[in-house]
Length: 330
Image (cartoon, rainbow, N blue to C red):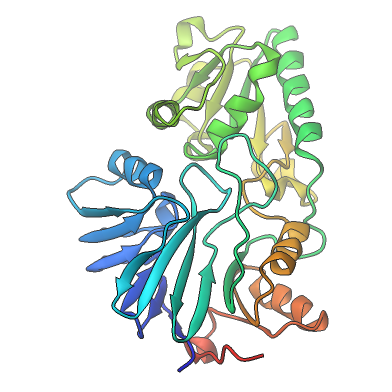
């Protein structure tokens, strides 16, 4: 029997009675990573060790954790196994591989094939059925080399400080903050972090990551520092204490025209923890699936691109695809 996949605030696999990245509360879900849009208040969860540790810091309450090391197959049911592989998105992010009589299913969650500074390198296991996120699934989303973008961010910070202003970089607390913080290491600039990013960065250090000098935001000594702040605090909070500032959004969406106007910042830099269009295509070529399902972002457009290139691909997340039995045969 082929894999059956149901998409409803997460992925439900009836044959193995398993949720993947369920956003609602369930008895048990496999969690690809610790971003809030991929997890609910589950009684039990299956994930990597870093993801479990990050969730303890972000999600109150008690739960049973089944922690799997990367690359080791474990029994999920008597007739199916589960294996986690690094996804390259943030610390602990995982590709989820399931094997049964239906074949091999690989679910990416959020992933990035390009090497990052604050995540394990992404794996590319082979699979019969690939379910992949396609946030940047249009040809216009091809990011410049990370080294080039990092150089621009560092120049932006130096220029602001030389002007007597405080550079403020808008980065999500988990993943992007730690990537940018490590990117600033060669610059030798001290950094101040928002509280939410501060405690998560400490967890990264527990897993062996090293960062430049950083501390908690302090308005009385902020001069000469780079401030990293979550975007949701853009209109208030600690920014009220930085009247002389220059702001920049760090996001893959910086490639869009008018990004600085939309973000209401002085600058925007396209450094992303997601796969760009080229990454998406390279990942498909590496996995060599017989069938592909796309979801999130430009799912329909990328599925169409894949079909034009000869792949059996369709998009999840639309009414006529909520309950879709999948034939793993080519």
